[in-house]
Image: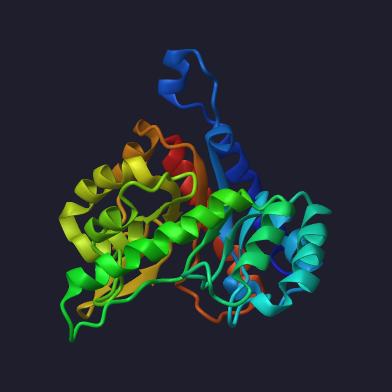
Length: 304
């Protein structure tokens, strides 16, 4: 299965792995020889590869040169939360045969008392999954925003306490949009203030930050550093007054190389999730080729 363009994809994967072995100048100066793979656990979001079996997914991701995936256990995900006890161990085992792990488990969990939350997170932690992504809190814009934000704080604290007890880290992704809590990142910092990032931190999405904040995204990058638990990478371009997803480093893209320079200069070390959004429902082979292409680009940006 998926034999077409295999030579091209293997070439891209090989180039990506070669770029990933480049040492950072700062590491050489400090005497520590850290490669991209040492510092960042690069994975890719596989929501558009859900038609593949667990085994097929592991084989194809391994061929690209990746060792991790961001894997959906949520409504409309590869695994539904109510089926996690039966299916999640199968997925982890099948991926493991190909040297691939679930680096991040994507969920739509928002509170500790939602159905299936505790059992799914407990199982994930037992299976060695270290991080999971939450769903999104949303504002009702017909009402004042600040009281709503304050109402989310005890919910987040309770969920963080559960995470700490179970031994898994929650991460909250900033997402552009008029009613998303965290879109501006300032409110997300307030939501998580006082919560250890080891229990609940921020997944900084540079695409959504650049769309939402324009030229001020570096201020938000500075703001989230104490809470930073993961970095999400993808790109967009403004077309007909709309933000349209494009391949990473597209000539019209709004995610510029300066972000990766700032990332390397930061103290962050951890998961880095590559998202392919511009193909939407394209066939699996096209998605896999796009992952390989953007992985090569990403490693080049990290090495540059």
